[in-house]
Image 1 (cartoon, helix red, strand yellow):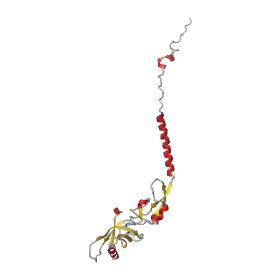
Image 2 (cartoon, one colour):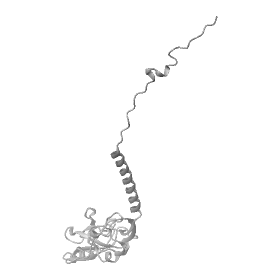
Image 3 (cartoon, one colour):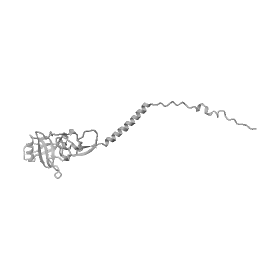
Image 4 (cartoon, one colour):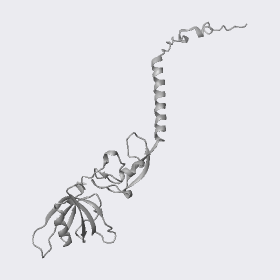
Length: 222
């Protein structure tokens, strides 16, 4: 006697149960304004990058200071050089204008590496104008500190010798060092030229001739 197995009634209806039903998916909301803004930002960034690359390739000629130039000192050929720099929009003095620069004077003390602008030079020097005089000083070791150079500010001091009468006193409170001689062999001594008031020049010259002059550097007065 055969027994037949009947398939379960729910087997055929397995895909129709509530567990197989999918939840409705809401339609994606489109935001054209945000998409347009994203495109603009991308294009703007690309344009800015392109401009920076193009600008970095623009090189202009400028003048760079190679030696310290004191306020009131005249520019010299040895104290300047040509450099090529990126065009940043700052109006630096072009190398083609070096002839005019060599006929002008520094308005402030310029340190090596400075790029010249028009405000850094003038046609007439306030240090070498009326009422001023240049005085040469031949100094011995101990009468001048090491490292004094053109453009520095110094005090010119009267230092009486043992045979002289009087006390030490300042003859020029803020003299400009106009030129410095070669001290490679003499150390802290040698020839320097300073700019002083013309009224004080005779006494400074007389004291210098007798070896009763010393100078003190004023690094904060540059």
